[in-house]
Image (cartoon, rainbow, N blue to C red):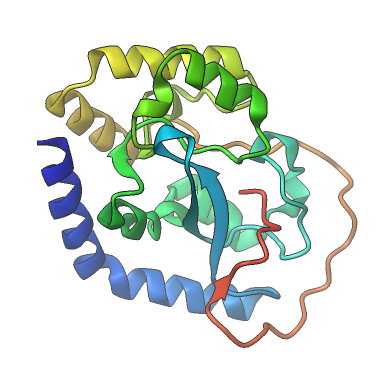
Length: 209
């Protein structure tokens, strides 16, 4: 039932919101250097690495790192609004359609976040498809504490249900949680926007979102 829900919801979402994703990607490209859609390797089910898609919310020169290790000065003005509204996650509907992700599940981390990967593997969390949203995200818990996050992910795995997933989706839509937070910082170096390159996808994996 979970996979059927994922398939129907991702198909409906892409059909209804595809225009919005394309429009936002175009606005992002015009607003700062780099493509509108950002591609980054993340750890998926069974520990397999897959390419996760997001609307780019950070400057293209940002180093690849977890969000909590990335200064807030790396986030573009438009990106800050997209992250607050969680619209940057919309392209992941394609990952859900492909079976790499689920609407609800543990948030996928970077392969370099070895401590979190180890904690999740120890608790059986890697048996789940990662999600666009999840219990920890709705609770406002990010990836800065691998043990606590893995424990919350494991509790979701033990109690997950179709109705529970629906509640988490609705709580996310209506503003539950703060998503992946960046680290406050007063200095990250100046960035001067320049002409965006040709192409719609950023595959250099430098954005830490």
